[in-house]
Length: 403
Image (cartoon, rainbow, N blue to C red; front, side, top):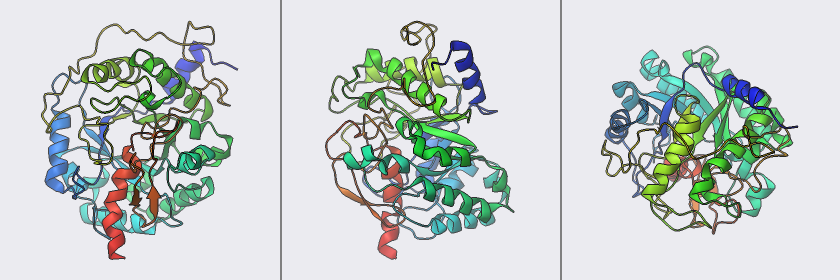
């Protein structure tokens, strides 16, 4: 059945945390594949907090792994940078292509001991995995999205994390998992939904091939995918962990990268639907994936003056959606009204996840040391190589060489 505007409004309210964080995704490496160090993360955090015209203070960061790039057992230096800049942290543990997350747990545990509450007081949540369910799905396999993981393993990893940190300040941190909207609407992932405190969704209308993905329709495509996610997760809070529109690169079906279109997307999705309403992590402040020729960074060289005006308009062009085309976005618990295809995390496009390995189809090593193959050419679900996989991938790509 369709959700009425009143019910949807209530669902949205339930899906909002006590504080509606504004932040960006951040990988562990730079565009030349070299490791980011404390100074690099500090530069990103200071730029984010000082963005001219921003509709709020972007003082949160989403990470994909706890491990410093090209290291085996060193905490990522983003932690020290966050302490210095008072930036809130959405932690991530890389879980694709592995049957254990012990290395992630050990490194995070070392960070808790090293930095204490100066660090843990900044942690707003942790995602156990990112787009693993999409990559492990029929659609993900078809689109060669790389090695993912099963719902059973994700639930197991959540239990492993809880056991490891039950007597630490991180015990109170809400646990989530990040995936694409069509992963969340698949009934096979109910055990994951039941196991988490919040649900993270990655959604990029830019990659919604075959669904009229021109910029004028982007807000509507986002609403449908977002509404489908809300309808599928049984009242669990929904955080938007990746979304954005590229400023340069190749056209994707009807979607054209440009600064003007990125501004439109910022307004019609960010300002209208997300900012200061839902915990939101935009993609992205600084591009880090050299394998993706589509670039999403909203600023050049980390200037606090962005590529487009971040000021939010007072009126919007996107009209609320219902089955009759008039009121609020439709959504069903079964996904019956969800967008066709998938609209996933934008990193691969269309249907699903954000694959973060690279659209070039090259193989990358995951933090756990497994090899993941990126999507090759944009089937319905070949996104931009979101931050999820790629960012974390290179992170531990070096670690694998040390094993």
